[in-house]
Length: 344
Image (cartoon, rainbow, N blue to C red; front, top):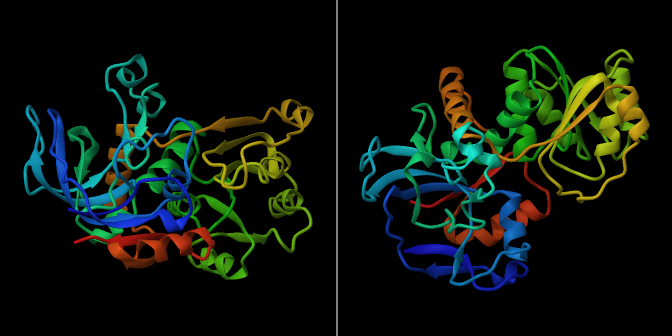
């Protein structure tokens, strides 16, 4: 089968497009003929090398996908050849104490398709049968492929970790990226008030068109935390959603109200931050980490998307063999929404 893969770590020059072995499903697995796959920053980090990641064979990149089930492993029930599905990229053991209580992304053996496991930038991918769910009928293939990782991450951050309540005011950093835009859609769609940040006035305006109440340009605003508090009448935001990391943590602490919460899922801006602990404890603020989501989160997300006819924000669709151009666009931060690969 044709795929985008790497055989060594490095820059975009290590990307290869060509033939790799077609995978066969083991017991409990299904094989999906991929119709479309979507990019994430994780693809870049994997390509450059991550601690503990070894390449024992050509490694196929990509975490998000939608397609048609074309083969079943032994013992698979509840899924049939021909089913149109969306792939949940998070793979857990399903037997440990965390999995048994439904906290699948907290599993000590948690793995990601495209990271520790072979990925979706290929004509076929093999995943556990429990990791596919029916594709919402209102979504085209390229839209369905853009939904899983970013929207599942945002869903888990908002509803499972931060206990977001509809109507709250939420500060969302780095609008334009997949998780930030997913969070904006979910907050706006539930009657919340979103304040978003970006260095691009174009992205801020696009975010307003999607329902953001206010936009803050952090390049031209001296104190983003103070600006966010001013937009709330001085009280501060209820919740901060962060996929940036080090630069935005102190901003969030300053922007939050007393009793406010912050949930973070990424470190694109760096992993190490300094925070004013006195402000944190005195104001009863809470900082939380979050990774992906549970199987139930994924089902609830797809159900909500179907009921509300929610569609992810798309930036551009490339052919599979154009992946280097798509990756360059993401690395340069030019995108507003998800970048998708048309596979079949």
